[in-house]
Amino acid sequence: MIYLTYNDQPSGVYSSQVSDVCNFLNQELNAEIRLVAVISMHNFKANRQKIVSEVPNAWVIPALPKAKYWKFTQLLFVFICLFTGEKKVIARNVIAAKIALFSKKMGVVKKVVLDGRGAIAAEWNEYQVVADEKMKKMIFEQEKSVVLESDFRIAVSSKLVDYWRRDYGYADKNHVIIPCTLNTNFRASAFSAEELKNQKLALGFGINDIVMVYSGSTAGWQSFNTLGELLGRVLQKGTHYKLLFLANEDENITGMKKRFPEQVINKWLKHHEVQKVMAACDYGILYRENSVTNEVASPTKFAEYLSAGLPVIISENLGDYTNFVISHNCGMVVKETDEIILHQQTSAEKQRMIQLAVSTFTKQANSNQYQTLLQFING
Image 1: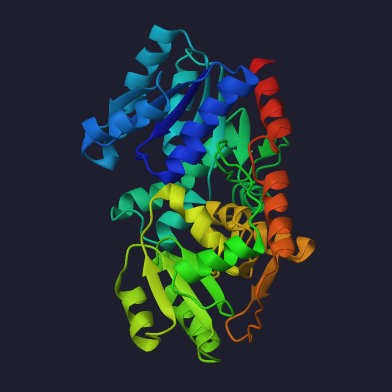
Image 2: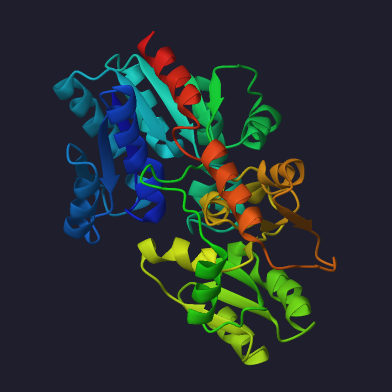
């Protein structure tokens, strides 16, 4: 079986949602999957090494320089399938699925599974992911075809399935819903009140401060203009309200630091340091504007916040997670004009959040869905 990715460069998301998934399926469920990653020629050698270091048996292949030439990879993938004898393919997102379905039409592949990571046509057009206008017009029909022609589908949220039904006329039931999950090396930690206090002091906060943390990019699609105003109203209430950015500093973060110099801190950490630092905070922030892209999304950050013991300040209509916050009482859903009332989190409250993450957002917790997927592929 092949897991195919196209033009997905190695990153934290790739590690947790591709490499770690392949390793989990192979080691825990005996799936015998080979990762085939077609990546950009830019920094090819270094990026190939990153992928192979995580998935040793991966085949990493360079893509042609321009995205519009992806169809040439279809013929290459036919030869890969003929050479390996593999006849089953899980394909991540639209272009990879188009490549896999071409091999099926050529008779060398029997089953294609679409690993749907979001509403790709909506994202390309709402957030200008690609500059080529012709490609943006084509992506709707391409996404529709892979949703309808694939033999089975993985969706990151029930809202993504709703999107497929509404926009593409998908009427099948051959799918599983698997949210973006934590790495399999995640271990739940029990932080004592004393440890949390010491960590908060080490970060430069007071023991009575209420600390919000924002982890990740503040780029345009993350809706920072609205978020900045929202957080500003909280910080104006008093200097014991603090805001920690775990991100590369940009103009958005610099602006917040200028507005609230005693309350806003920015840090860039190594990946293994993030959980311990977030655990000393009180709330994670996951606020995005209302768009189709965000309506169907499954941000990994949600699981990461919960795994550090943080309830989540979340916007309306954010994937399945807005309703999850309400039904599990693990944060607050806020509108643009809402007043936000916060309190310090106790060790017991933090532990409840961590257990929610373990029971919902680990790969082990989604083992039944993975088993359903493999049963279909091998059936």
